[in-house]
Image 1 (cartoon, each protein chain N blue to C red):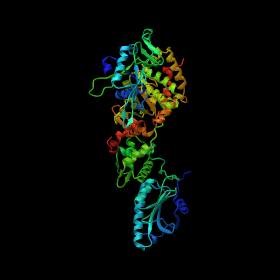
Image 2 (cartoon, rainbow over the protein chains, first blue to last red):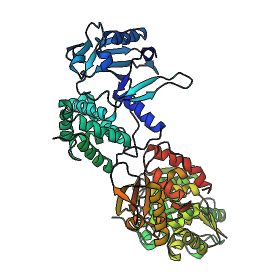
Image 3 (cartoon, chains in turn purple, cyan):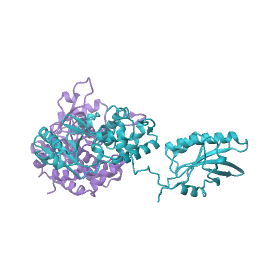
Image 4 (cartoon, rainbow over the protein chains, first blue to last red):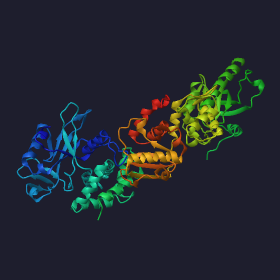
Length: 273
Length: 361
């Protein structure tokens, strides 16, 4: 709420962003690419993306740092991962916030940040930075504002990345977890890719097609296209198998025609040239 | 391999009936008239069942197939018969009632146990009761014998129309009236099929065939229709985007009327509240080309306005409901489709059950 007062735009990605998106789609009764959208998985991890405006401004990012301190969040991975201890039904259930940021697009913006991979922060900012997420190339394109206030509360707006941005980021996340047994071989990321495609509205599809055209030459988008081509080439490809693996684990049935559509859609949005 | 048994085959198999640790022997086949209770009640076999140093006589009734109705009938007959014969016998000579069938489900065994009547099947299940002396209960063995209803599956395909029609109208004067109602609601079947299905439904205690034919257990009928439901066999489907959606609907409606093409709009929102909106309209039709004749459209797989599914499945067009210009799928068919889809659709299906059971659609 305080950050909103300071006109600091909060962009929520990750699982929680998808959860909000699912609820939003249901609330507005939007027609989506797939008729059946599986329930969103609940999560206590918030992926908070810092826009270029924030990551290039020490003053603005420090407002976020101060707000986290006031809310009793403590840094876990200094200073881009924070945690608020919490207990739910007798079990420790902390809320975690990861601060992430895309690489600023222009040379002028890049001159305002200090990068020490994987960290990125505005020059002069202290005790706060973001985790550099280079694949978030289109992060600020077609952001979707969502009011998350409860009834009787003043409007509280956060922004969700466009499904195209989500797709690109989730493809990288899947590739990075593909061999990670502890992370379920990235199966939930693969499932999220299916959900992102399935939840696209017609308008979002058209926007995604435009973004695909505009950013086709960007190295990270090309890389994403390569990942999609490798992991979602056919029904037997490992990405599709991971989707099915997670669907089985959460007892969700995915119609085979949706998996075929998923492959076609990825091919169209992220052609591997 | 499963097979349906004749009564003689069952009787032959009873000679070697095993139910460890009991030893079962057939003492007499076809009890003679002099041995009958003399009040119309009768038994089929006299069995001796022994264990350790004990033995008891059982009057057994043989069932070719144990349907709920036949079990209830046998319970009544055996209660009457053993009651009558025991009252005539000396105290030391007591006869216990027993049912023998190719297969007795757990539900049936429980029903028999409740009535204190023994039951043994040829598949390895059974309950043997001698009051105050013996109680053995064994279940879990699969049916080794074919036990389907007289016709293949009365809850699927054309045969299911005779059951489905009870959700539109729950009471009939006779079989002809049931057939008439099916025909009136767009179903095509024969007197013989309807008659056989009704007999099977009666055996399952789903309908009652007394002075009138009436629905007895709507919930069981709905459960069995759902359990046996299969999606219609769609031979072709086409997703399209129309140049003018409303104009397309109008043209399709005209085509359906003029060319007598069966079609039905899958529109769950008409009967149930659905949380998630579905943009495209889904139509079942026996001819996609006929229905789309003169409609300006382009084929697309993404975000179509209309999806057409071509099928000649009779259950799809049965009991369609006219809604303005179009026919909608019947409430029952809509329920069955929703109930076999995702979680949210199942919730929508659940919201329809009460009205379906009360015949209020």
